[in-house]
Image 1 (cartoon, rainbow, N blue to C red):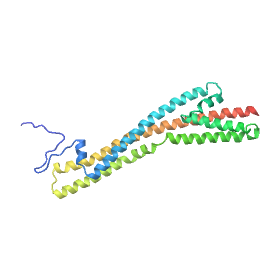
Image 2 (spheres, rainbow, N blue to C red):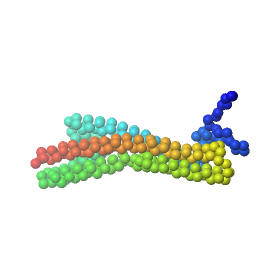
Image 3 (spheres, helix red, strand yellow):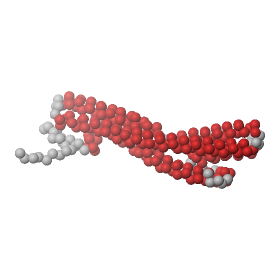
Image 4 (cartoon, one colour):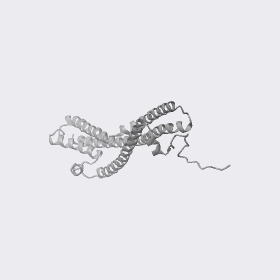
Amino acid sequence: MDSKAVDATQIAPPPGLAPHDFSVIGLFMQADIVVKVIMIGLLLWSIWSLAIMFEKWIRLRTLNSRAEKFEDAFWSGGSLDALYERVAKKVRDPMVATFVAGMREWKLANERGAAAGGALHGNLQTRVDRVMAVTIGREMAQVEKYMNVLATAGSTATFVGLAGTVYGIMSSFTSIAAEQNTSLAVVAPGIAEALLSTLLGLVVAIPAVMAYNKFASDIGRYGERLDGFSAEFSAILSRHLEGKD
């Protein structure tokens, strides 16, 4: 028996039907307009998600590097007033912003004489803690920006792709009924086009879920680092207040 070469990207159609291209681009070009719109939307969503992943990766690396440098300067034993004067000129990361906010409130209170009386120590400590907490919340909101896009992509992109698949299969069965031909050459192209939509949905969702879990964990640790710094700084100010009594 003579062997015949088989083209993996095409299925021999019945007489009267043109060959069908089963490459990814071919399936996209031959898909229904609604399925095309869904696949284009998923592709753009994937690009947006990748851009967010890259931005978060760079940002978190930069923030942790700057935090290490600032903590080294903070615990070097130098004057906090001198450190404040140096970093307050250009606040570039949340930890510096937290320190500057606390020191600014402290210095304003001292200028007004609020720190002079022991009865006002508790109020000053509370104000400093509150200012730092508000600053941390505001800064962390910026660090977490666009994380909801990754969460949404991870939880819904598959269903969006599945919606395109369902619509594509419905269209295929409608065409089959109209042509009254159930041969593989008629059925397979429409189903393959429809399944490509689900594949794109998975391509968007899987990396988004993995990235969201990783970055959410990294952001959580960075937030704990800011909270720890705030507590230590508050303790230093509290000891300073006790020394004034």
